[in-house]
Length: 254
Image (cartoon, rainbow, N blue to C red; front, side, top):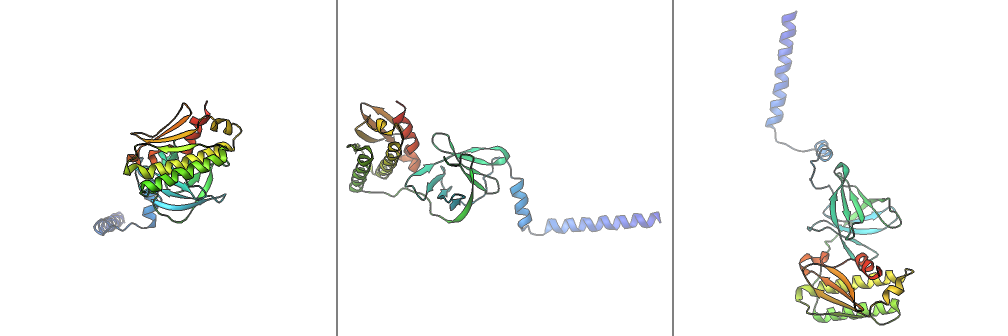
């Protein structure tokens, strides 16, 4: 009987080895189980799952486009003209937190592609679901005449909320910087509109009479002699101009 059991074991081992050999020789076709395993055991540093660019909606109904097709991720809410440049940073469990220019969290992405949106009304975050495809967020070249019109429009919008004239001007503009300065002027007018709604906003707006846009190597904001100076860096695309949050911080910190 011992000999029979040994023979049976040998036969079973041989069959098992044959199955393993067949699996190794067969072409590899990753199925749902394989993809789930890979996502659960993704190595640190691997990119999180999710479409490179898509439209999302939060629990409270805020709709936004998230564009991860370029080195610096971009986000734009449907109800605002501003495009936010995000800085990804690692988080526990292999997640990624996307922060704005001031280091405040905007999104958290899990390894499996889930998103959480952080807002002023929901600082602890709210779930986000995929709502469809989206187009990459890019600057569109504009002519010098179109730039002049955008500066005038931004000046007009700012004058309405400030109840006084604030001149928007640009110096030594290159073709590469025209679109970015035009976008920066729009973002600045958004910042001023938000400032006007604050208790100390109108006092802050009374500090300057001119907004001057210039090109440089890195984006910056400064306030001196009643001139709000905004430097844009065309080499960085949409990420090459200060955000509305940064403009508000500089304009209200005095």
